[in-house]
Image (cartoon, rainbow, N blue to C red; front, top):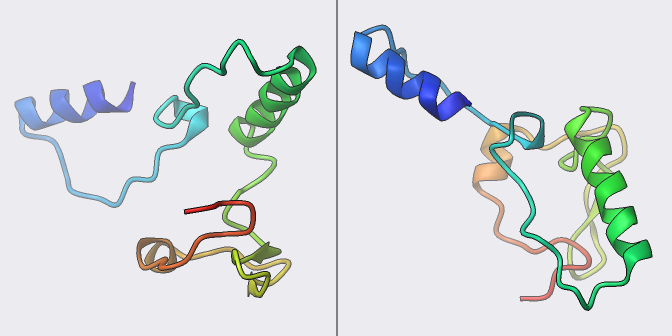
Length: 97
């Protein structure tokens, strides 16, 4: 696990600061267990998409991405930069908040 590696490096003096964006492929980001009220076919679909993201075949920060208002915020073929992700001040389509 990346966190253990970072602590180990900090303790032995070899840690170097860097921007780190861990994801599902490294188990840094994960989903909470789904409710028993979620139908099995939906659970299977979620598991399939989760595997697809973890495989690196799909980057959720690449377009096309629409904002919650329906306007295109990331065009097809483009991906958000680290700086753009850190300064997001909008919800994406499908997120209510």
